[in-house]
Each structure stands twice: as C-alpha cells, then as structure tokens.
Image 1: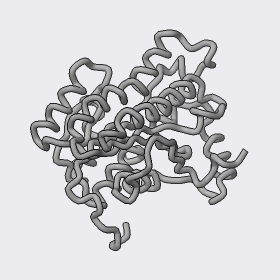
Image 2: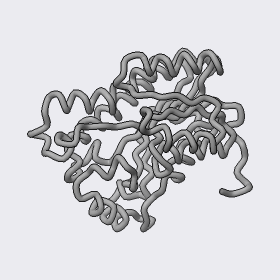
Image 3: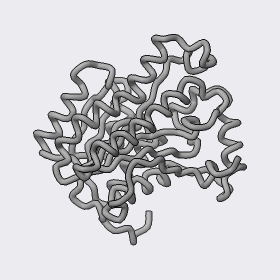
Image 4: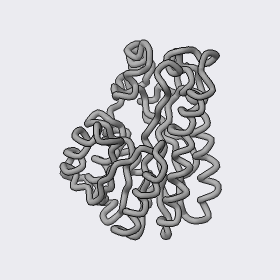
Length: 259
C-alpha cells in the first residue's frame, strides 16, 4: 500500500458481506475501504467460516462483526438492527455472495433443477434486494451499494451455466435500484471483476482455462487481483464519483472489450 493514499472515506460506515478468506473479493473491498479511512462491519457465513473470517476482521479493526447466512430467516434483519444500534447509519454496502448447488452449477442450464435455479437466484440476487431495502433507511445522507457480477452475465462463458442468467438478473436489479434510490442520493453499482482465484470460482469446471483466456485477452496483459476491485469500489464510494450510478463497472484489465 502506498503511504500517499489519503483517508478519503474517513468516518464512512461500510458493511461488507461475503468474506470467506483472504482471497475473497469482499476482503479486497474491506481492505481498500479501511485503507482510505472507512469504519467496517464484516460478516461471516456461519460457525464453520468464523475462524477464517474473524481474524481478518480483527486485523482490519472491524467495529461490528456478526454471522450472516441470507438463507436463514432473521439473520439479515439482525445484522442491520446491530448496525442501527451501534452506528445509527450506513454509507456503503457490499454484497459479494453467490451460490448454486453443485449439481446445478456443473450441469448445463437445460438440466438445472427448478429448486437449484430458485436457490441460486435467491442467494445470489434477491438477497441483494433484501439488503438494499434494509440499508436504504440507514443511508439518510446518501450512500453507495455494490453487487459483484461477472462477464458471464451478458456473454456466454462456457461452464458458467446457471450463474449467467442469475448474474444478468443481478445487474438488472442494480439498474432498477439505482433508478429507485437515486432521488435519495443512493448510488448502486454492479461490479464485474475479471476472473479471480477465489473459493467460489473453484466450483466452476475448467476454471483454469477461463483464467488463461482472460489474461491473454486483456489489453493490459494480466489478470486483476482483489485489491484492484477493492480500490475501484473505494473510488466509486467517494464524492469523486458522485454522478456515477446504475452501470456495470468492469475491473478486468479491459478483457470485456475484446471479442
């Protein structure tokens, strides 16, 4: 980290959801926000994940920590009640969670079960809408919301399967939320990183081939890392980006522009 980075988000309150380990995109976002001065609230999925995430939260000086499985009734509401009680407001929300049952993810779209499709959509997309509904009242002076997408939302990526339609729905949700929340000074961004070696990506078949192709296609000639994504989000959360909302922001070394 450069010593010249200024605390441009000093005093801002950021909730980051989706850290699984120190390779997570969400962890890159949390580190970047903390580097520029934001206060953090960090969640882990469950008791199994806690030993991997809690030390990272402590390292970053997170003021609020909690368990959050968006598929468990009441846990999401409990997190926002805690934020309301301890902070009384929220400025930044990062949704970086996605899930599809393995058999539905690794099979073709035609073979995806209705139950698997519904679960993937609920956890990966609709949970962002539920978070936004709870976060918006806490963003009384405006704020910024982020959801993590991928290139497979608008172009076919072999083996991405059911997550393609799900991420497309997520990007559309970001656009509609940006429209609805804009009058309240709340900006919404879909962030589309290039492929990264995260635990979630390891579930994709032939993911190594996707990584190699992305590096070859990218005009900058290399893959991005989680801090590239984090600092892009940090910038978008500052007043410097106050007139940017509703779009899909690619952080992929330019790979998305190459056919």
